[in-house]
Length: 545
View 1 (cartoon, helix red, strand yellow):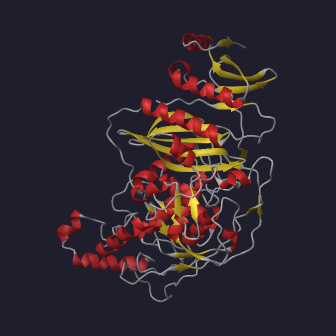
View 2: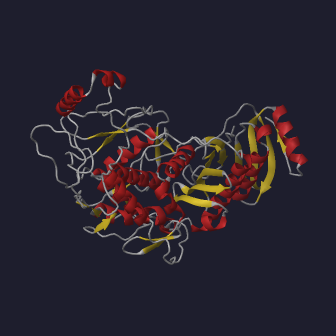
View 3: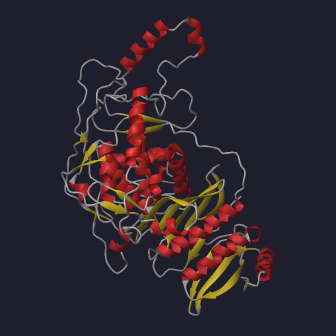
């Protein structure tokens, strides 16, 4: 069982630095290996784009869109701050290039265009992202936008981001290699990876996503494979790109050391989601045999008649289909498979022709692998744009509803739409509105909102992690920097997990230097842990109340 060790340190201001959190799991089973502050709700920054991409891959698999579908760039999307692809309002660009830009370069404008194109508006897409997060088991995550820029009520946890990274690997293996690309053709330019440093420096690393804002710190969800083992880990609140990558390397090393060599792989079950289209009444279409919780995804104001997917399911159509199915099914067959006449899965099986087209299209997303690499960037481009000495641009607030301008079905008698060979529309037109400013301060929603409720109460991200089972603790000494003290605490926590148990850790900023402490212990447990640490020729001192 992994540890729950909470890192905290003295801060001159409550929002001077982001809290630190980490989580490590065995990707083969989803089991926790190590955790510290793993369920604290923090800002994920551009790790958000993992969900944006997950939603895009899901839409392609359902047949809602294709890789060559062209999305219209709104003025809101074009106004997003760096990192950017450089899209212009009114421009049309294929989805494959948007996906590459969001996955490799972490382009904020590309992620926003994806969200607006799939849901009609970014706020609607953020709601769908949150609902999908619930279906994936991410219970401490709430999204407000598609790109991860600072917004009130936009948060996640190290545990949830690791869960999402694992789902990308298992649910969409045909696209996963995108996250190991050092560069990619994004249509209007060649983009370089924000994660090149870590991919090049850590053996076996093959993804996944970096993130940075001033409020969030330096974030990373990474996956690596060595032999039969695959580890997924997340670091939130790093002090720098180098610090984040160093901590991630230590966590992955610990994960490979603790994970068993041979284990039965437990692949995650596909999520069930129910599309709700805003007509006069909504209808839930149940999956035939899926135990996972249903997710209700809102879409455009009017149902879109797409030839390649189910567009509208009305009560009258269901009733008529049930009657036809009952009339055509022998009594014995009906009793053997009750309720299967209209069962719909979250991922409907594609017809042979659709599967052939998808198989031909998916490699095109990765087709430029042999192209020469562009000059690598120094982490997310947003890291430079949001440097501590320079105030970032005002962030546009989520806009109101911008429904996709697509052909809608007639308002005549209800009908049940099925897949046909008619080609789907190749473009999506989105209305535009001038951007407005968004708050730069991250505020987190109340810790326990209802799953589908819009959280109201707020809580500042930065917090003290004090607490524990006693008034005794131990000191590992004074260090010249906060980062150095954190490194010693992390290394010690990994090495002495049995002796330290759940003891919180703290970096105290004193006049003499940064003191690395474990607190909240009993006198006996503190002395035992200190004896074990001292046996490794490491400085340790027990202190009491």
